[in-house]
Image (cartoon, one colour):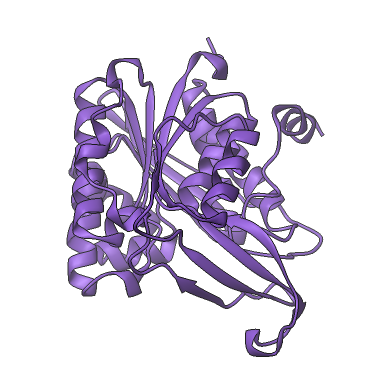
Length: 322
């Protein structure tokens, strides 16, 4: 029997940033006009799940500044519980600039996040959470890259959620420039992945983290570490699942959903995560989870912005029934 989203409590955490998107294509140095959006992989997933009817809370720190106010207002307007968002008077909210890409290319992005309020997240921030009431925790590999204290918080949340019986999803979301070395990144993220029920790397990410080439071999690395299921994003080609079903291993692959025009690729992986995680939480099959992930990922790349293409439940039902 499928589980109602409104009966499930989900927590995500990380750094949201104010994002200024160029109004016209070309190098950022020559752009005169920008428009403001919200950016951040963790909060993209939070917004996507909230739009599908889940009870979602988001944990972070923002500065006592206009961007911090903008982030809080944007998230609460999406019906996300903001009780775990702290306002930090000593550190600013992170900011990023994004080019307007053309012809489906990945847009160039510039970050201004060093020393941000969110980089000061720490284990003490988890004290207010009622883990007994939590059904699911979503984590990414971005938050632990922000600082040693944010890494410690990530471990704390994942360990306590697991001990409380909540399910956990983990998207590596590699940001190599935030790590001291590639080796540290691999070791740390693979350790965190072992605390999750579902791991969702992209194919290139999985290859870098495990040293394996094929989706099956990548998945087997994480299954050997105790993960229940691995979902690998294959880009336009679709997605792959491999996981335990009792004493046996189950695998499936679902081709991607074609789109007429790719507008903005940023946020596509987060859209896929929303689809796959929501389906699994509702008790749908891995194949159905891949199909929904592909569907929402395809929606995400057809609009400007990281989360603007994430559908409501009504929109999703219309897409699934089309």
